[in-house]
Length: 173
Image 1 (spheres, rainbow, N blue to C red):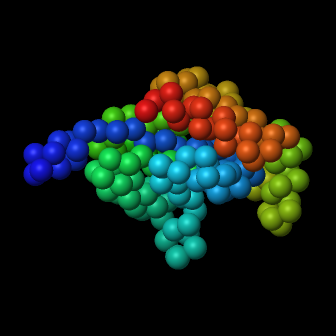
Image 2 (cartoon, rainbow, N blue to C red):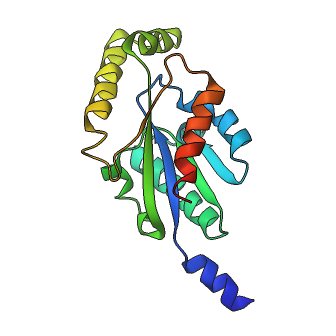
């Protein structure tokens, strides 16, 4: 029994990150993902901000530590939130994963503007996140290995978006 426990903790499993610019639907899809992937632990990266943690690297370190502890029990994690490879690679627990896979949720500019303005975001931030969304699209096959797939949330309903994410995740498990 002890040898089995050691073996499980030494096996590296993947971590999945559903990323994207603000307004793309990362938070919106979480409950549906939990429904269609009940064997995964799924978290919103922004939840730590709600309890007062604002340092971005600390937030990433905490979530990777949580995912690492979950992985040691043999379960996999999906983190939904904006995260870049070069920031995740700086996390203390990065080496504990076999690979970290990224998927980009994306919507068109008009939809993003509408969603962010509904949150009362200032115009400058709306424009900054539109530029960031464009950068993600242009670099999905350059800055990510394997290339980061893109799921368009402009008109897709939440069940369809979750189904596409599920298909993506299951190809790596």
